[in-house]
Image 1: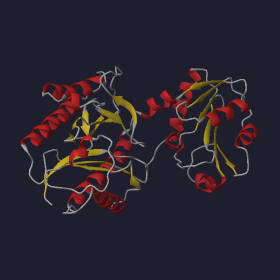
Image 2 (image 1 turned 180 degrees about the horizontal axis):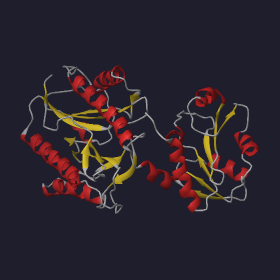
Image 3 (image 1 turned 90 degrees about the horizontal axis):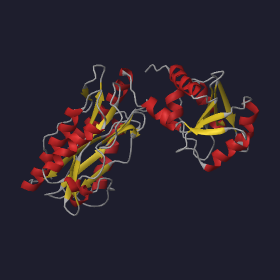
Image 4 (image 1 turned 90 degrees about the vertical axis):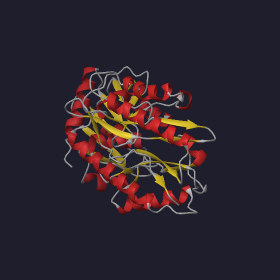
Length: 370
């Protein structure tokens, strides 16, 4: 995949210049990856990307053990290694000579320790939050990125298709998680993009439940919410809900309402309208059918090199939908003690300003036989 990382940095730099921000300090590994092509989890060690907006020079400070790998990947001007016994802010001070008056940081990422270290190194600087700027930039995906995201979708849908065939009597939620995650690696994923969720019966009413030792039983809802991250670090996220054995009339009713709600949300997607309209369209179906109190979360979120990115698709978001945005539409009905249904699609606003589905797995109710 050919990504112009210098253009990404240039786009960010131009925005920062317009705000008279002389320096940016990026510490989120995903943001560093987005801007340089290099990803590492520094764990407790120090890593940051400095962008001097005046000279447009970039400095990647990172643990010494990662320097060799970064040297062949990172699209930056200078790579500066920091060994375990060194103080990272002493190294920064010796390399960054320009003492910017205004420095941009990701305020929802930077730790207190990092902020204090920067203040000690740049005592006269004003610190501002540039997280929203980066989030906004990352919200727009090129067609090439969409192809990377489609790869993640293709893998997870194959995992779902083949993983369902492994279901048998006596299997637990955790057993099925293990089958799915084995298939993820088998089919070429780097791993799951988030903790695989398999919830049976009454546990399907928990939007963020944890799989455990509960056995799959006839009459259960079976909610599966999962995704993969590819070797190029693109994520997928899909949810489908099944019924084990014979579905009751109430289960069928709830399922069909959610299915209709998902389609209503997808049908509403287009460029030029407030993002809230997609949530409202999906939510209205559930409310009109008397289940509004059982759907109390937003209808979707952006995704890309992380499974949760901008934009947030909720009923109060007045931001205008634009070409290039990619997000989920995932309404659900969750009835405590009974169970729940969620059906999730990935939707891209393409070059024509129209909705383009990346996910293709059928939405019709499927019955699983033990």
